Image (cartoon, rainbow, N blue to C red; front, top):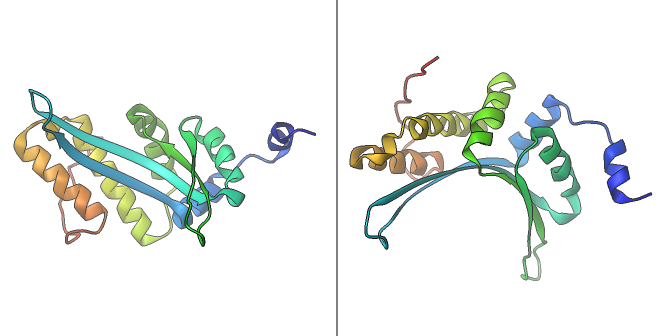
Length: 165
C-alpha cells in the first residue's frame, strides 16, 4: 500500500489534538521590516503560523496541512552532526491566517499561558495589519515594538487594539 493511501486511512485530526500539538511545538511569528533599497518607502509586516518537527515525526504535518486546508511544508536540512533534518509546516498567506488559523484558535483556545499570550499578540498585530496602521511612521514603530514583545525582546506590557466585533 502506498504512503498516500496510508495517510488517507488515518483518522482526521481533532481540534483538541491540533491545540495540543500547537501548544507544544507550534509558533506564531511576526517580522516587521523596512526595505530601503527602493526609491520609495516599503514597510512590511509578515505574519507566520507554523510547526517545526524532526523529519522522522514530520508526517503529522501533512495531516495538519489537510486539517487547515492551507499552508506549505518544507524540509530544513541541518548538516550539524548532532542535529536532525526537520519538516516545517507554515501558513504565510494573510487571508488564510485571517480566515482559518485565527478563527480556529479563537474557537479552540490554546492551553499554555505563554502560547495563548503569543496568539493574542499575533491577533492584535493582524488587526493592526488589516487596518494598515503600519503604513504610518508611528504605526510602523508600534508594530516593530509589538513584534519584539511577541518574541520576548522587550517588556510584555502593551495595549491591544480594541476589538471591532
